[in-house]
Length: 108
Image (cartoon, rainbow, N blue to C red):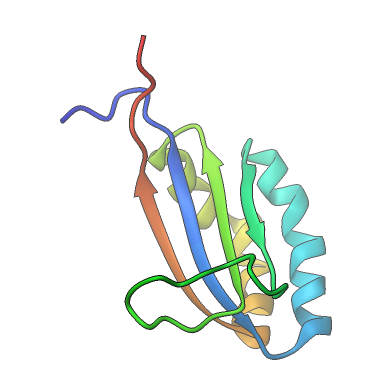
């Protein structure tokens, strides 16, 4: 399957342990996401019913899905000096499972 023209995604399952530090991470990572053309698609927090785990027994507070133009752009963002300067805040403030994935190319 070709992935030419396919979007790339970051999907994260997050449980926050230090809200103040996590808020700083959000504030400082937002301009970096914007710089790489990221689009926030899902940002479900802890309100009851926002995230329903139907299978697999996963436990987390927040589900985040961010779309980029391509998986290459995801990789460029993630390994950029700008993002690496702030990602430690998330590591300090939360437990996360983070996935990078290729989406389906748009159909004509």
